[in-house]
Length: 337
Image (tube, rainbow, N blue to C red; front, side, top):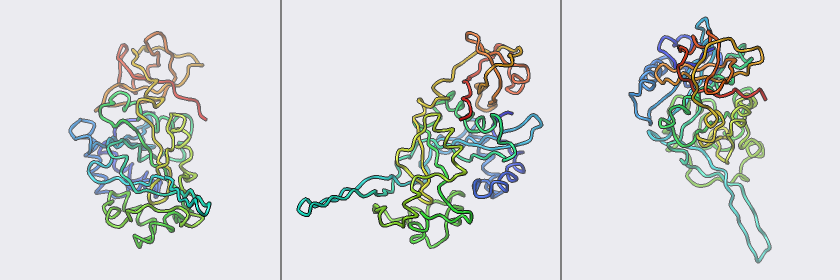
């Protein structure tokens, strides 16, 4: 398997993945917008765009050149248009004369993540969710950020899908957003996914919202991920991401974050010289990046660390488009949790 930058010729495969994923890949469902995005991604990897517009979109490809998954990093959110979420804070109301004190969870609309980088657009075909495929798709893109930290923000964030039922209804949306937008959750979420976010600023109340005024169902899902998002949460939590109280304004899913330099894959990765041989049967799996941007290739393969060199087999070197002695950035792949 190889994680590589998406190409314009991947358009049919991405549309097929979007149909398979349903709501999970809203940004990929419109063919015209997707075609424009693929061209923009090509310019991004060629360093022809500003960081505010940079879109690093990857595909996971097998040796038969079949596209099996997709993941991305948005280099800087909120610099072209506001990026909103809620911060869950606390309001304390007290009356000493009456001996009453109340601590009330409160939602504050904010743009505090502006300029940070976002992990987004993650999907792997269900029949390929085995071995190291999911971790390569999710964590491989972190090696790009490790190699080129100047292209990204000080933090990486990930906005995880929140609670919704099988019909796509969100208790948080029904208790909050529906009153201001006059549309159902799936429609609002679709518009947001397509990039039509201006209506949020136009219609969302600016005043803090007291969580105690929401329905019990809405209060219960604040900061809770959808079951489908739990595998991604587990992977990123092991990398050092944590929930610091920010949530999505539509479904209240958690926004998790980590300083770029402290993320395990970034912090522990190292530059090594490539040696081609046959690793033994007990060799651990490593994430390996060819240290290129425009012709980026990342894989997960058995490898052995020998001094300042990384020993891999010939097929791994071929996948990375490298020769013996070439430099790689690599890090051991963590075991499945």
